[in-house]
Length: 83
Image 1 (cartoon, rainbow, N blue to C red):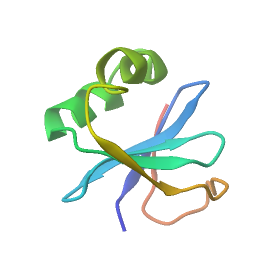
Image 2: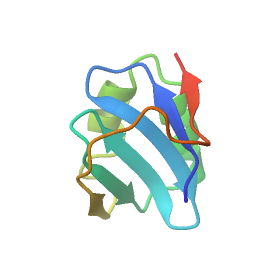
Image 3: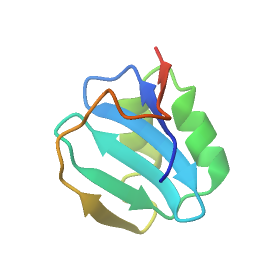
Image 4: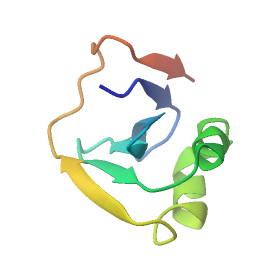
């Protein structure tokens, strides 16, 4: 399972990166994997506004697939807070 890192955002809950690509979990529970490079993950992780970074630099720029629409669970092991 991909290690997810919480971000401060009104729309994005957490992001992660592994061999499958960049995982983006939204506050509504939907999770997508984008075929984005690790540098994009790091930039989004440290962006002042991760949600705005996603809109301006990820959404529509990289192929993606929906992998989950489960509700987010902040007690998942291996998650880190980046707030």
